[in-house]
Length: 97
Image (tube, rainbow, N blue to C red; front, side, top):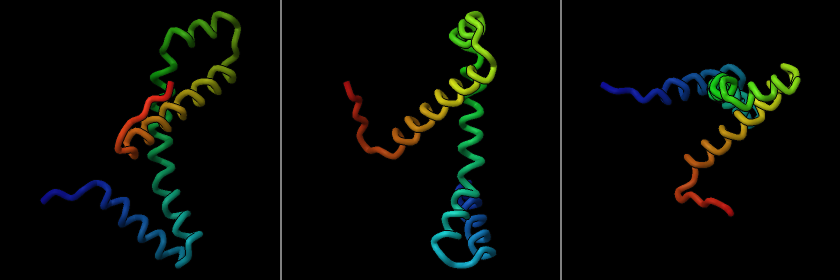
């Protein structure tokens, strides 16, 4: 029998909500507890992919520090993640421009 992987996270959310008690604040905490690790993995994967790109090497060559490069990589990765989520939530894709 096949069980959807989302069922496990739903059960965990119900358990967290049961421990914290009723209320919208606790429900939001339970949802965040489940979604943050997923989003962090996606952003980390994007950052490690972008880190090997040519523009990062060019930034290092021009003297940009590691902190500045990581800041730009995280910004780029989160923008890519937002586009991915929007693309999955929309029925029809609209490309502006």
